[in-house]
Amino acid sequence: MNRRIRILVVEDEEAIRTGLIDVLVFHGYDVDFAATGPEGLDKALTGKFELILLDIMLPGMDGYTICDRIRAVDRSQAIIMLTARTSDEDIVQGLKLGADDYVPKPFSIQQLVLRIEAVLRRSQAGLEQARTLSIGDIDIDTENLSGLHGSKEIAFTKREVEVLSYLARNSERPVSREELLSKVWGYARGLDLETRTVDIHIAKLRRKIEADPKTPERLITVRGAGYRLVTEG
Ligand code: CA
Image (cartoon, rainbow, N blue to C red):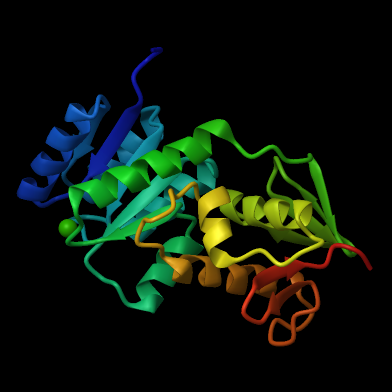
C-alpha cells in the first residue's frame, strides 16, 4: 500500500467529530480535522486531502462558503457534505456548489463509510473519457470542465462531465438512475440509493445544455427507463 489516504474532517460538534475520526482511523485513513469554518478552509486550501468531510453549520464560516472557496481553486477536490438539513433546497445548494455527495445526519457509520469509499473510488480511478465531448453544437473539454456553445462558455462540475460522458458512451439507449448511481457515483448495489441526486444533476445539466430546459431535446427522459443523451444534430 502506498501513502495512506488523507481525509479532512470539518465538524464543530465534538462528539460527532471524535466519532468520525475514530471510525476513519479504524478504516486505515490518515485523518486531520478542523472545528471551525475558517480553520477548515485554511486546512483544505493548504493541505493535500483525497477527501474532505464538510459539515454545513459551522462557527465562523458555513460549509457552503467553504465548498465554494475550495471549488474556486480546485474543481477536482472530493467533498462530501454532512448535513442535518435534508430539504431538497439545501441538497441542491450543496450539489450546486460542487459537493460530490452529501450525507444526511444522523448517519449510520456503515452508510457513511460506503459513501466515502464510493467517492474515493470515483475520484481516484477517474472515468475513461475522451478529452472532447460533443453534444450537438456544444463542445466540452472534459479536463478543463468547460463547454463552448458558439461563443458562449459553459462551466461544468467534474461530476456533471462524468454524467454526460457516461450517457454519451451509451447514447444508443436510455440509462437508468440506478445505473448512473452505480457507474458514475460508484455506489454499490443494494445501498439505499439516492436517485434524487441524479435528478438534481440532470436538472442542472439541462439548464446548461438545453435551449429550453423544460422541453429537453438533448438530455431526454425516457419514461420508465431513465435518461438518454442525444449527441448528434
Ligand atoms: Ca455543525
